[in-house]
Length: 352
Image 1 (cartoon, rainbow, N blue to C red):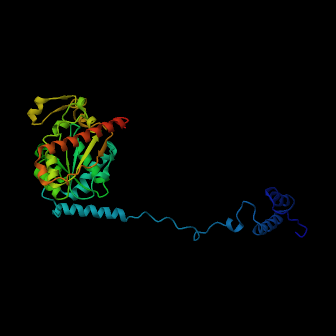
Image 2: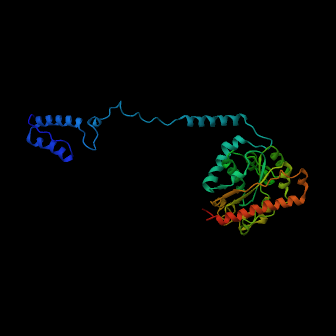
Image 3: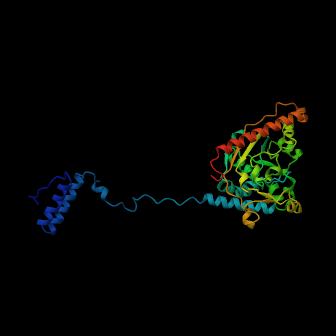
């Protein structure tokens, strides 16, 4: 070993020569000594692009980083506890319902959760102008009505609650027929709906609630498909009178997409009279396909809330001025109709 010549490790080829040539000339014992010498040189001068010999040593079990902690189970446990607490309150009757039958807890935790997948995944509702809805205080939202079945009111209710920064609830004014149907009556009350009358609307506005009204009524949702997105008559302007009495702003709302969910191509009036309905729709799928024909088409919806029309600047006696009510009603109607046309022009497709 005294006459052994060590070749510097300047590159890979020198390294290969220094390690392999002595192994061909000498025995196993010499090869072990040479390996020891190579290890000593490696500790002094690491190869370019290589870690030091110390880094080549495997990391012991103690030096390895600790395994990732299991996922926190606290969130799941809290949800389970909250669900059990909710069930206990429902069974014991320990929950609040207002004078109209509105159950805010049930609406937030159950009913909204059932409507939300339809809103987000099926109709893929896009909301515009949510900033026009005040953060607090009473306001009257006036929207067009369409779709054969009143799903547009429910989607508007989810749109306000899920998109408004304050998470406000919309209290809809519904027709008498809604509260004459079993099951539907109870669900409508729980969701905060009430009769479409001036007394209930004025009372809700006085309590600082958001109130939604669709003045077209059955004329809007029961019109033929050929008249889609053409607003029907707004009645006698009762909603304007209510807003004037309370000084609440009127917010026009335009809904595009609901007209095509049930294209109404006919109306079985005789059957409607027998059933006590205002109309009995005939669509390309209903009643020909039976229950499957009652599934709405998955159209793409857009809901836009327009700029508010303020009424707090009018004197109290303005609510009894028929000319003023007519003018304000016409202003709201024209604003909704103009926005409908604008949204239809911007729409790429009925379904996308």
